[in-house]
Amino acid sequence: MFTLQIINDQRYTQLNQEIADTIRRVKPTASPCLRGGGGAVRIEARWKHWPCLFPQHGPGRKHLRKIELEEWQREIVAMYPEKLLRGLFHSDGCRFVNWASKPDGRRYYYPRYMFSNESEDILGILTEALDLLGIAWRRPRRNAIAVSRKAGVERLDTFVGAKG
Image (cartoon, rainbow, N blue to C red; front, side, top):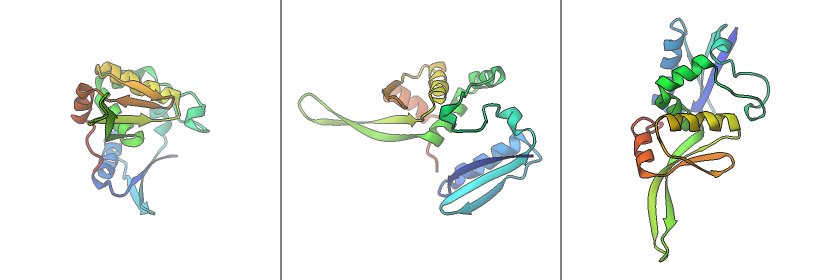
């Protein structure tokens, strides 16, 4: 028997409930357990088939091992790239207001999304999903992906939403 555990901030009650509901949709007989403590909620469910759904799971740190989507997973991402991006940005990303300076020294402000992860494979999965939706991105650091153009930010705003 394997246990799927997702740990999230307890402040995100709506998102925590959505996680539990998603587990129930994947495994209708599941009774996800939400355990709290130390400001976090651990949402977990036991099932012998979790490794079938997450073949990327394995020993060691994820940025030190291969993380590659199976063909059936790629097909699902192609149908629902917004769902994948929402999950990725909620787990390892953020939306914030950035600023830049004009040549005359005045600042201007704009919203942007930033995703950070040490796994080159996960960064690639994110950028492939952004490409599927035609959302422009750039790489400001070796471990980060930014979406700063207005059209891309507005598109992400339609489905990523606040963690609330």
